[in-house]
Length: 384
Image 1: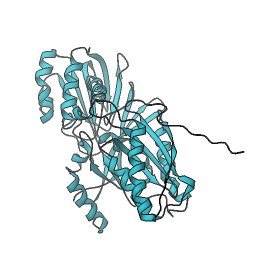
Image 2 (image 1 turned 135 degrees about the vertical axis):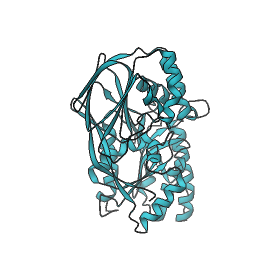
Image 3 (image 1 turned 30 degrees about the horizontal axis):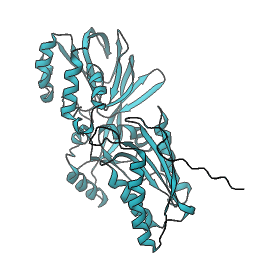
Image 4 (image 1 turned 90 degrees about the vertical axis):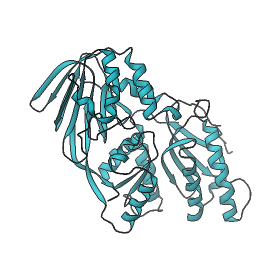
């Protein structure tokens, strides 16, 4: 006797959750290369519309997706059922036309799972290895990776890119795109030109540093800025805003809302031969100059100078801090008396109460932390 199991999506949904979804062809129908290209095209079509796509792999008879559901006009995330209906329905019509067939292409059932803390990297490596294990690809490491998104998207892929030394092209499709801008990639047209030059044999690959945060046994890589204190609280608030309000404007609104209730905390920063202990609103450690869509919090930082830039914004009158906030967008805040700015290859940061640490716009860990630099850790494709 055969037992049939069917489960309709969604079974669980969470805001800002990363989903791993797999769906198969009905009867394990084989998809030739042209059909797999159509499936890929329709998955990419939904990126930036209903989903933020982190990874997609099209296999011989099934599809793996890693994505976060975006929000609709009512500031609610699109349902998994709605997302999958769009991808499966449109791709099925075009694939059936290609194959000269009729009828149902995809199974009704899709397997979905919310990625818990620490699971994302393992699942990403699993689906990337699938084509080689199935004989579709003869090699695991690609010649290059294209990442469509913002700072949070590249952040999630850093361990795999670093470990396998894969050159990466950042295509700015996120909210702030500070990392892409730091590489000179200001829009999709510039990214395309960089890709074309790379594919034609151009030597437009640059090696940059990565930051490394250690909190106990946990290690987190970052490419732009790690922050703790008021900016981390604002970051968390901004991440909960509707997608259309995120980025520069959203971060600014979140910072203003967070300022009223935030109480400065005693911090100790040990960097090289210097030890700074004071009450502060926040501490930012930058490998790049900006975060939050253009806030130049560490304006002297460079991606390949082998140094971390550390900005400590000390206690001051909140009204003064509010008035000084616009100067951060020009990097002029470092002239304020209550701001300390230094450079070091590593730093240890402790706080009077545990503070959330955000890296590249995503939650990383809590203080105390040790932050260091890995020189020339990431290969990036740049315009020139």
